[in-house]
Image (cartoon, rainbow, N blue to C red; front, top):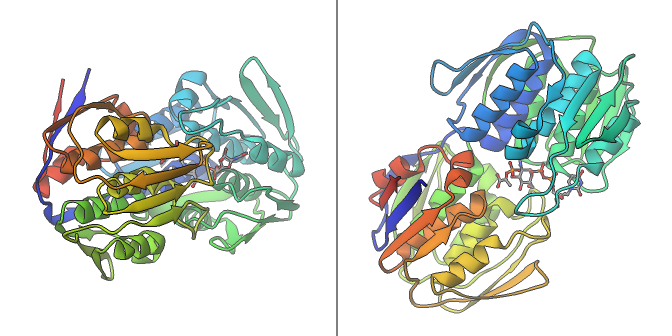
Length: 419
Ligand SMILES: CC(=O)N[C@H]1[C@@H](OP(=O)(O)OP(=O)(O)OC[C@H]2O[C@@H](n3ccc(=O)[nH]c3=O)[C@H](O)[C@@H]2O)O[C@H](CO)[C@@H](O)[C@@H]1O
Ligand SMILES: C=C(OP(=O)(O)O)C(=O)O
């Protein structure tokens, strides 16, 4: 079994370049189904999740050329299938995002139910309610969801019970070729939503207001295709910024949109780091001693849940008491038990709140990457731990971090992938 072996105690210095955003490229690839002429996507991160969603497209009859690294050429002239099978949806929930584009393009979709995952039950009720509001018929059975709109979808106003990122994206795609106008109220405002809207518009769609709580989509008859460059990954950037802060490092994180990083930048400064915002980069200098901080995860522009585990790793070595309130997912504390094994002092209550008492040292040991960001937190803890940390189940990390070992090694970390 492959594992990461991290020898702690190295100060990180130098420059690291951030890849394109996983959470932007996945819905963008799903949206490529909408276009009848094909698309070219640039700044595509080389990730397991990208391979998985490309396999989903191939199941639908699209042709994907990924022969040039970081570039995807998608031939979407023919869509011959409408089913995303269990093996692909179970490894990556974002496969469910093809439901909206399939409904728009071919009027039907059959997608395996994603099921729960390590960070919570993650239902899809908001997506389904939205599809029904647009006129689709939904049937569930034998582990699959089928949606039908043989005569096309019809625009309407949809108020989301929660600003779900995935539901906003799925409904934006579905509505892009509906008859008339759709307004999504209480929409998610994440930068990845804006990137998807920009791509839909490049293909010939008419989406306005993405990045605000009300998105207006004027349905068009058909879409062509186009070229789109994916935004930088704010979570990968944030993970390196925390690494710099934790290791008393001095690092330049390149290919960053600081506008997307505001909640993390504020917290790193509270923790005592120096953070200098550039036009497309950010410079982080870690303090001698980290101060304790408080975070509460929220939908954008609040503090991102996808940075909670990494920041909790940082809190473990701050001087004093920090706290975390996780409000987006009901069960995103899988990393706590692993951090405890490394000598951290953390108390949780109710699965949503944690108090972290900083300790002078963490100690290397064997730990598991229980999910993607929990895995990143283990790497960060390993960078500052006394001795050697061995991290297993690293396939979770491969879902979302391109070349993590090479990037950290370039900053002076002692980290190897073995097995
Ligand atoms: C591929 C991708 O972009 N993944 C991100 C996306 O996931 P994802 O799109 O799955 O996250 P959502 O915003 O939909 O989920 C947020 C919360 O809403 C709940 N919910 C969601 C949909 C629904 O129909 N019913 C429902 O109850 C979820 O269980 C969760 O508790 O946004 C999350 C929140 O920022 C991030 O952590 C993920 O990294
Ligand atoms: C939870 C995440 O991703 P996904 O929604 O793909 O599981 C994440 O990127 O941290």
